[in-house]
Image (cartoon, rainbow, N blue to C red; front, side, top):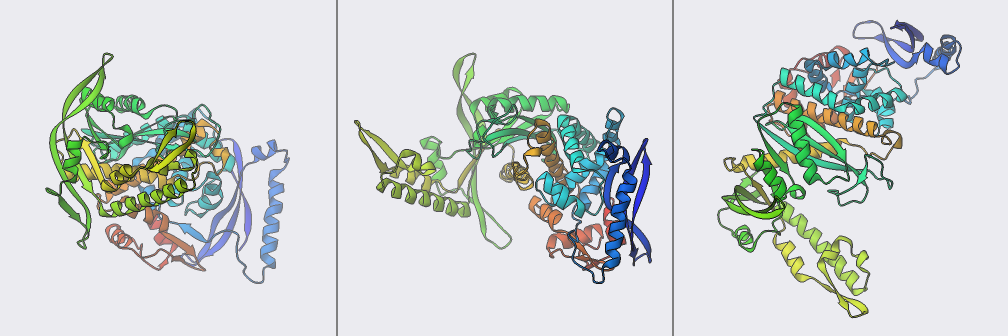
Length: 558
């Protein structure tokens, strides 16, 4: 078969592309596919190519000449692998009818590319293989089942555009989610996190601030509002130098106003955001809270309750292995809050759920003992304080009246950490919540944050796409949409019967390789893909896949 130059007119512009013709054995006829998109004639004329059609016709002639000379088929520099796992996300995107609303941006902007095509393809690419935008364009997009017609420069321009107006795009998805699938905002959840950038210099958006990874790199903060099923319904980004504790309160208020939410919001966060002022803010707004709390920071009476062996229940897996032990109590607990410039002690009724994870305990004890050995070794060598790093919490450094400081092991700190290794405490205002609901709510939000960590690439890999605030926001919008579509699939289609990790593994692993006449399914068998194949009545477990079978997947309506 051969290559030819395709010329098409659209909105007063002439677009060209190199198309490859080939024999389709399924249809028993000649078919065509885009080999290379070449943008518009007008674009190349601006690049001082007077006759772009003649110019690229020569490239077509060269391709046909090389094909004619080929006596033996050789390996290609283009991977034969196709990513197919994103077809459920495409089906959800189609059902949400997002394209109709994104296309309105064309009315006020002279794009030379399809904005919805760019937005959707970047979201699918992020889900099947998270990497830098450079690699996404050159290694992932060409291997999606659908072809996309925009250049790398247009990708960056589009990313900047959607980043500049990211809240509008979040609103489009939230409104359509509510209209098509429904959202339950009688009770909403809030979580926030930060993302660090491996760069030394700050800018107006990437600012050095309190990092959950205890890093000194510039960071960006991100808050998520979720409905009762922990499906994202709002996102807000803020500079990393702003403390999350007061920012959290502002973000929650703004997101609720923006999404017309009047229901009760449960503020869910880790130890870093568990402060009396945030708890007081939750209560004063008629909202609730669900925070984790440091066991080591409890009062002596509360620690005694933690270590009591009585009243514990066990949570086991299907094989009878203990996953964790737990117990709970409801009581009044004191909090010191600021009110009109004074510190006031208030007593709040809350439920506390204590868990003990034996696997986590073993891991924590190993890490503690490793740091202790490091501390002992450095103590013997009379190392400087800065050399101890995190292990420094296990040493006492005493001033020696002008002489060299005395360094000794802090056995009390070691014993304290070993004693409470594996314990975690969750405190909540929702005293009617069951122990299982409290545990799953906190850990579901952890999975959301984990999903972001899985999907985001090394943001410093290509400075070109992290150098501006708009591109950074565009990147995180794509991450947000990937999580949103996955959560809709998980909760609205699969009825929360499978974990996020099961779904993301399928999205990334479901692939096929094009052979002479068919596609070879290279996906490793799993119970999830087998169940999904039966539920959707699609041939997901077939070894051979035809073109029509793959089309049926991408045309499937959930």
